[in-house]
Image (cartoon, rainbow, N blue to C red; front, side, top):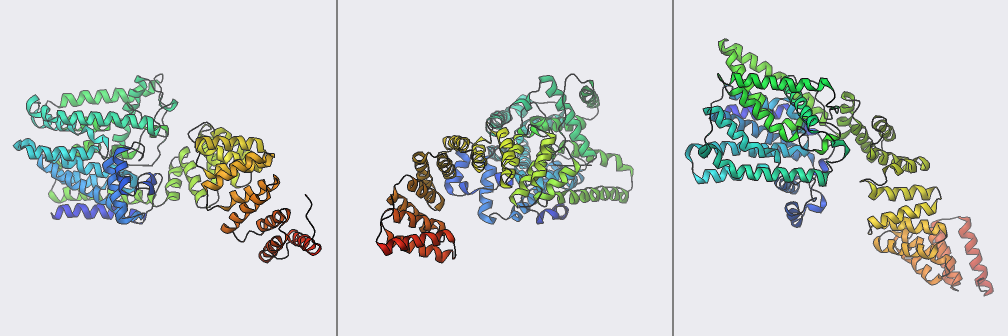
Length: 619
């Protein structure tokens, strides 16, 4: 127990920097949003595709519960993620001790402290890794206990834990294959009845879940298109290079970054075959070595097999910006860590006990220090993206996301970041869209239109038409603006801002009848916004529908009583309706709210003259 407590304390100490960290990148897609925080939202998590970014219902149910406990405070999520990681290290220790694997303690500590795991532990979204791994390892332990005694209740418990793991992240569907590798490692053979048959339901469930997850990745997340146009041979070359990459980062964890450079994969490049040939050579060597010890081959099979879903044979949306990521090898890394630690213990058996202890302590201290440093990268959005850019200047998505962060916090430099992203990848639509909006906000309307046009017809189209309408209206190109606003109302009929923009653009064209209809719709959709009814009042006044215009102005002034200009307009339509006394009152109230305004003073004088002479306003 003392040793397990030491693993937990070491993990907490190494990850201390994340306890001051906030949310990054897409954490908002996982921390339960307002639409899902009710009991009906919990039901939607399980029953509605698209309600959450990925269909991992148990994971998002966990986030649902967590939000009820600590709300939007990032500390609670970070504490839980570190606790789950420490729990996985302890479970790994228990599993390896049950299997009598040499170096079990060292392997558990290395897993707990290895900096490759930082991305999974410090990034709140990757609770799917830490949570699913706890269930994965617990299921493995429970299954091995069932394997010893063959009791139905133990099989049921193991199956339940496996299902929860898969419903948290489908990469854990590789567990039944891993258990067969373990059975082969222990005995050198597999028994159909004893080893395979009990796992057949697990294989079936895992296969269905994995295929379904891949379908969701393509159709709901967008993992399809030209970015994924790789031949079968190119996918094999990609997979072989990725395996080398991941193994290299485990052995020498230098230059760990969030967005790694995206490789160019081509079957016509001879250099690309080196990794494949190397893997085949190592595999042949491990098969030959298996006549003496099966452990290295078992570890390699576990490593490659667990990585398999993210090696390139299936489309993963993140391939758009990189083919590799540290969090994809969080579970798979055990296939390298465990054999290497066992080999270290075996190789060091001739050394004195203190020397072995010192060597292990130095290794763990180095890993803990690297983890501490790496964890600091996740402190906040700006640190996160600037660190990524410093290590990978070609990370176009990091530039775009940094620009978005700067925009949201009203900080300077957002436009520069979007332009940097487009210099690297000129066809990156989100950067065109974000740059267009930034240019619009800064009054550079012509440039904004140019950028927003490049984002039209894409997945950003729902907002492109809205912003295009605004930019074109600012340029007094009302016909084009009305066309864009109209397109937006077709895509999103309940968007009041689009109807307001459409009404104003139509009014700018002189199409007052259509404008009044659009503005009335906007007023209905935005009952607390005075702008639509003020605009409606202006349109009705120009149409000569003075009583209706007066009613619209009064409706707006009930929401915004300080709007002196609207009171002046109301006074004018009251005069034109023959209500000179009421108009005088409105002009006086407008002057009280805006003293000395010459236009209002002129209107008041007109009204007073009419009142004094009992005159009737001209038609």
